[in-house]
Each structure stands twice: as structure tokens, then as C-alpha cells.
Figure 1 (cartoon, rainbow, N blue to C red):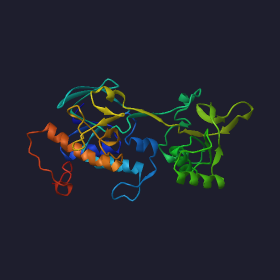
Figure 2 (figure 1 turned 30 degrees about the horizontal axis):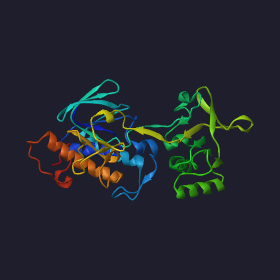
Figure 3 (figure 1 turned 120 degrees about the vertical axis):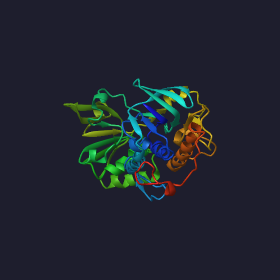
Figure 4 (figure 1 turned 120 degrees about the horizontal axis):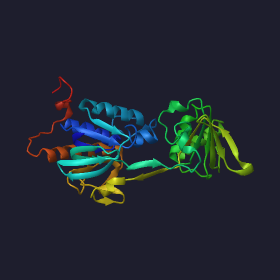
Length: 336
């Protein structure tokens, strides 16, 4: 594959970067290790509202991602999902990026929008859990409707566990929340909302408790076992959601010759350029003085990086920045 810009990460910042590159006349390929666009928004809280997106008093994370994809669509960015960029050879203007599957992408510049990096859910050491993933055992909520009318067990005591317990309590047939400690680490308002649901009988607490086994029949989850010995409880369950934290890493990016600071990529805040010429970073993965890890800041960084990349790749081309109200969308016929 070949493009002007390789964007590593298809979260909000990466998707908006694809749009901004298109507005600047640059083609883009977007690579993400997840199976779909959205990054943390898709993997952790697709149906939760976000309140700090300009002009949106409230917008669901999944809806935000869908709108960002639609915004970039006129420029036809190409996406590689379930893929990872592992090597980066060459120099500014002529990079060759190698992927985990053995593919190659030739590009002029690289824009890293990898969020917290490649992340994987922490999984409990339970026999047979791998065979049941997606068949009753889950680590993310991709579609809320998937749990409607089901006997659900949620494991964990942090924000994700309690947020989804509150959200799904009205949709599922029954809901048990299992946590190994009596104290939760979620936001106080969420803990209070959970307490009210417990009092109303919508959520059953098993605290302190620990999942010690899972049972299945015909390849589908049937029971979740809590505790051991004579105190063991076998809960009938159609689905179990484990929220035991995430393990994240920059992975191969660490070997690309880029200056890092406490696990993040140090950049020039005026261009988002890294220490390696031709490589830029935006969003949560980038760091500089007084950096705010907000989606809206990632949007601003995407615009600045796209224009810096255009200047890098086309230094002799005269370019006058114009507002979108003047420029329109060049990829759409009939617009200026």
C-alpha cells in the first residue's frame, strides 16, 4: 500500500487526522490493532456520553466515532483493522512500514495517534476461558443490545464495571456484580447510582467475591462459579463481563528511534513533530509541557500535524490556508 501519510491508530484523534490530511490534499492509510475504528471509545465505553466535545452538549462515544468516520469518508482513507505496524524503515519522504502480518506500507510521513498504545484486557486465569470468548465471555461491550434479556455477571469494581452495571441493569434479565473487595474505585456518583439499584433489587452484589470457574454446554457459557469449597456459588449466566483493567504498551513504537518521556512520545507542541524527522504524534500518546489529555486537544493537534506534514512533503508547493467555509470539501464534486 502507498499513501502520503500513515496514521497509526483509529481513535478520535486518528480519524480526525484522516479528515485533516484530506483537507490538506494528502492521502492516508489508517492502521489499528482493534477490529474496528474508535480506539478506547469503541473498546471501553461505546454507549457512554461524552460532554466536552465542542457544540455537543452530550454525545455517545459510538456516535462520535461514526460521525468522525463519515466526516473523513469523502477523502477515502484506507483502513487496516486488526493489524499492527511493527517496523519503520527509511526517512522522511520515503518510509516503509512493516506490519505484523508481513505487509508493507510506503508513505512520506507517519502520524502516531495510538492513544495509550496497544492495549489488551487483563484476563483471569480460568480454564476454558479462551474457547468461550465471544460466546458468553466478554471483556468489552460492543453492542448494548447484546445483553438485553440475559442473565449477566459483571466482574470488577472500577469505573467500567460500575458504569456498565448501572447502564445494563435495566436491559438484562438479572445482574450480579462480583468484586473481591468491599470498596469500589469508581466515581462517587456512579457508586451512589449502583447503591440505589441494589436497594431496588435490580443488581445483586457478591462482595467480597472472586470468580473461580466458568461452565459451559455446547460451546456456550452456562454458569459462573464464585468462591470455592462448600461456600462456592454457581450462578446461572448467559454472559459474563470481566473488567479487570487493561495492559497497555507502545509495543514496537519504542524501537523506532523516537524520544520518549514516561511511556509517551515527546513532541514539539507547535508541529507535533517527534525527534525523528517525518514522524509525528498526537492525542494521548503525545506529551509536551502542560499537555491536556482531552479528545478536543487531540483534534487540534491533528489539524496542526496535518499542515506540518504538508509543508514537509511539499516544500516547494505554494499553499494558502483557507477556512473550510471558503474551501469546502475538495473531494465532493461541485464544491470549491
